[in-house]
Image 1 (cartoon, helix red, strand yellow):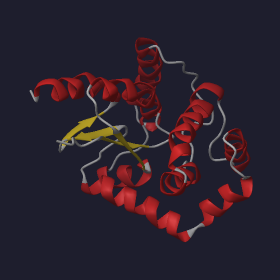
Image 2 (spheres, helix red, strand yellow):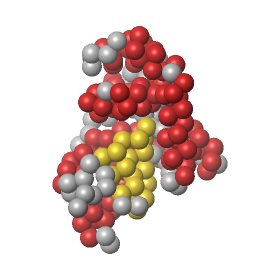
Image 3 (cartoon, one colour):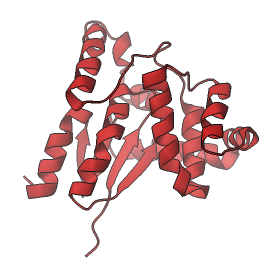
Length: 200
């Protein structure tokens, strides 16, 4: 009997989403699960929850800067805190949506390349020139990337992802849903795995 994938809602500006992207595939493989990658934008989520980026919150901000890097070391994931941070990621997300629709074989390489570029090399994903460079590395033409970013249908699909995230109760990123069970945060992956093992 087929089993549902692990749905992962993520934003390229989220360091915890980056960390999750580095470890979720191994976890899913251990349990014969696929992954549904759903790019979305945290801005509308923050607006709905009355929140704002962690680093802009008193007390939580300084703590988060410590916790992110400690979490990266704990998971064995390379990390260099980028500047500027956070950044607008709607263009990178639009390219992801387009690839998932039209070039699915390149979607995951793009996701990993984009996350790595920002969180290990400091490349600003809000800069179209940086997106062009990422695309070139995957054999994508800069003109195609520009076309996707300006395509009304791609914009609408990304908005639909945001609406879907809000309807699913997404309150931050990364946010996972498996068999209808929600898990928020990379630190909840041990619980997600336990759920897959025993439905605790």
